[in-house]
Length: 261
Image (cartoon, rainbow, N blue to C red; front, side, top):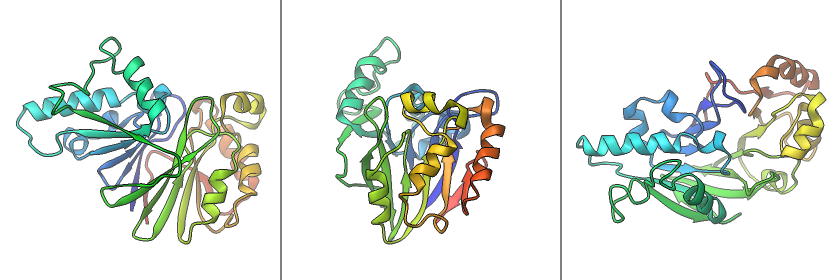
């Protein structure tokens, strides 16, 4: 399993890209920034997007991936004609009503036609696994103000958990502790410790919040934990606060990271 970090920040500034992780070249975990990073040929390999929730920083580039795929198709490309979005039914409804609605962006679920559209929406359910391109994906409900799931990925007997945007939660750690060969966890850490109240009301984490949740993790210190969704303006302070926790194999992701398991 290969995970390429396309964007790992909870705010967009020059040099800081929004959340998106590329799995094995064909699957995205959220779509905040792939069109900013990937060439048209690399974008054309994407077949699936697992959308955790519908906040803009996680869905923005669905619009541009669809547009670019349409151009590719009309240029004569016959393979990978469509992209399937896997998300909770409520999230797919929101995408259709508020995003792919012909006003904010064209409805690529009917372009170029109903029978051969660029985008397909597939409803998923918490803790009901599905398989895409050789990876078994299990959605995990997490604590966020809107419907949101993290994802457990399992390929060739190796597992990875992506928490998506989440405040303190229990079920994710129960599932993490049950995995026989967990390779890594990618989890939210958005605000510095002084902004704990803001983190709580917005369904996010601080370094102290991360530490409180990690106490539920039986493999703490042996399985790597990677943090993402940091606000760029407080990044340096948060780096210091995470280092002060002195937890082995705990660090913040960067946009240069590529994880191979």
